[in-house]
Image (cartoon, rainbow, N blue to C red; front, side, top):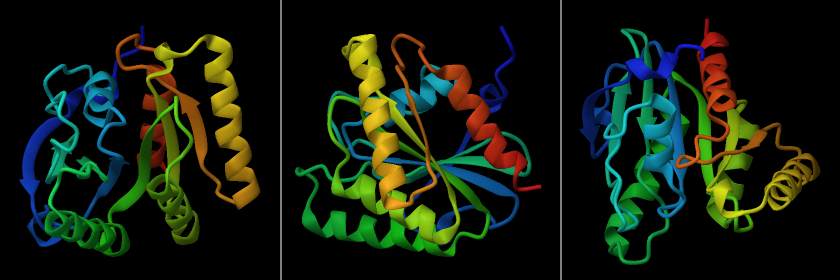
Length: 201
């Protein structure tokens, strides 16, 4: 089995505002997704560290921008889970503003890993993120999680539906199925993420 380049990830800080993030240099890949899409579990599986990102049975646990370094020049940024109804509207408005600022202003941002539940159609937030990445020239990799909840045929059909939608909308995103619990799709996802950093050179 090949070594995991994401295993070097180390927690650096959690920021409530873009201004609190590390210096805007080097390269970053951001992880985005709705609150119940399995984002923290995916990060833990990708890095091979069970406790890197805090997981919870309560959606919306990630309420800060959490930064992990791979080395002095490369970082992973876990964006707040989006869309959880029990979060107060004032906080949701704050995070909409900060996520928007991060995506628009962060010069070191090289790509976005968009995490969505494979069992459901893409939500408005997912579509907005795909559109934004396309319009901004940012790489976007759509990670359809929880593929172990479907049969192989159902998972393949869901991936094809997402790819068809991206083609129809003109979104140049890559798409794959993924399962944190079963370890399915790990190598493909890791290679795609590292390619985003490589393209930054």
